[in-house]
Length: 228
Image (cartoon, rainbow, N blue to C red; front, side, top):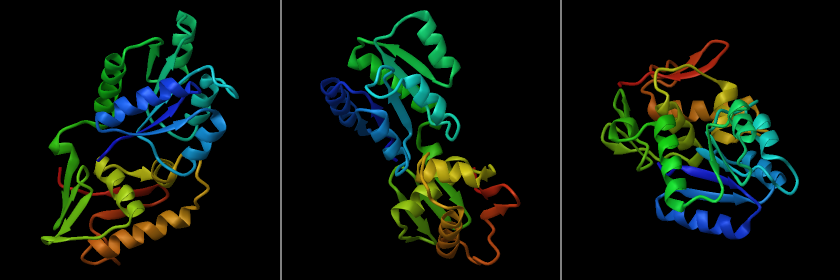
């Protein structure tokens, strides 16, 4: 599965250089020059990593990270010309996962991003192919096979299934699923999540009324019981 990165930086030239480099290395990149656009994007989509400048025209990157940490644990890398020890400590203490001082080389930035992606999501075929019952999900290829036959899922259905597959046999709260699949600041209601879970069960469970794999966890959310 292509990892999506949100780049929040008001330096248009640098953003273009970073975006081109990351795209060449297989990442999807969306750029936001300020906090208003960033939060709007976060309300509509999920991202696997955020690359965040501190000095923005309408906000301080530290405040954005603090606000984000209230609803999401998406990895955050600060990339800033502010290089004091105090700034680096602040960035990590408020929830940042890494801090890269500007200027940096593209090779160095890519190395930091790759390392954080690996630590957060793992890598290799074992982590990207999940099976349960007669269903096999290939997260990288975005494909689902049941009893040898391809299953057609909508983009959101697959994103939801992929997130469950990335956290197999783990109870995940409704709030977490909404944040990570629909976006940290999405206004989507929990009923929308329930409908998508029902659709997944109808397509993947042998008996949707009595699911064996995509189960409800009372007063928590949902769990995918998979073979791992």
